[in-house]
Length: 135
Image (cartoon, rainbow, N blue to C red):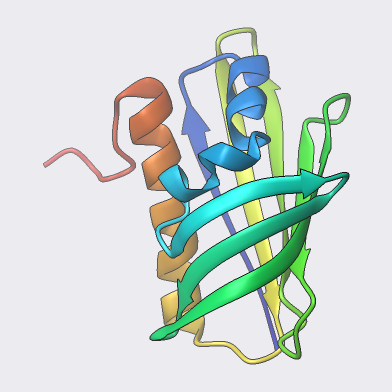
């Protein structure tokens, strides 16, 4: 069992960041393992993802709360997979984005690297910068 968390700062207003991360069709652009996602109605989402060397296609769920700028998601599976993403304003022009993930069977370093890459992808797409240290 594992719980993982990673945070990054994005130089975009919180409403812009939340609108992007809460749109189902944008999920494959920042979650590297996700190949396709589309809304099925309500909180239901159909996804195609490559997970641990296997392609998973099936139903998942995603719930976005615009007032709290909070997105929750998960899949009905034996792994207990679910996560959350929080967007917090830092003034009017920056956002702190925190992503958490819970899974019953986990590869700690691989999951951590995946969360870091997810936020690096968001940062690159939304503010044009990287989470990599300047060097």
